[in-house]
Image 1 (cartoon, rainbow, N blue to C red):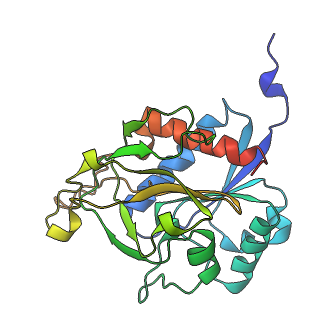
Image 2 (image 1 turned 90 degrees about the vertical axis):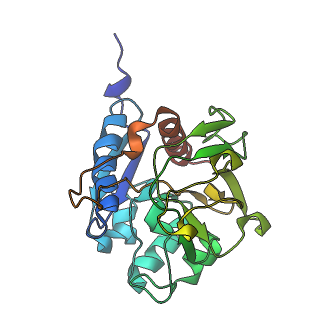
Length: 258
């Protein structure tokens, strides 16, 4: 008889989310909050969620080995300092899509240098592809635990892809795990010409070697805005290879080794 799941879980995950703004981001958050609990029945972790960002404090965080930001980032000084301390003391983090967004001026200005410039290394958001489309992704680092079971290239779930202010290739602390393969071009369907990428280098998953962290640019489902139905046209966790990347990233984060 197997008692695999009778044991206490190897690690505990807490996912922070806001889920108030963009319908595509809300759709992703709801989907993540269905998918991760399902994965927790197979893999050795527990999954809790909170939309109260004041839970970013030392007492609350001490119960968890991995923190997820599903859509946004903390805004108050106390929340930000607690997160920074958690990460500097060996905590683990996974962020999706909009969690890295910053643009001055906007509702999410770049007013947190440690997070955007030092921790993520990407600086401000520069632009994105539109509409959300699948991309062919290339594995840049095939030795990492998050990627060592992936094929060299694979087709992702549809996503809105971001371009960043800083070139992550020039940052010695950043290990780019996946980037957009040139076979993806042209990427995006427009209608605006600048929403379609024809060339360039675009990292989509990376880690900062000074921290136990992984950022994934995925996290934007396709929504039927054009016909005003707001119907969900794509799902992020509908892609087997990409799911392997996400679960292996999480297991690496939960293993406690940098």
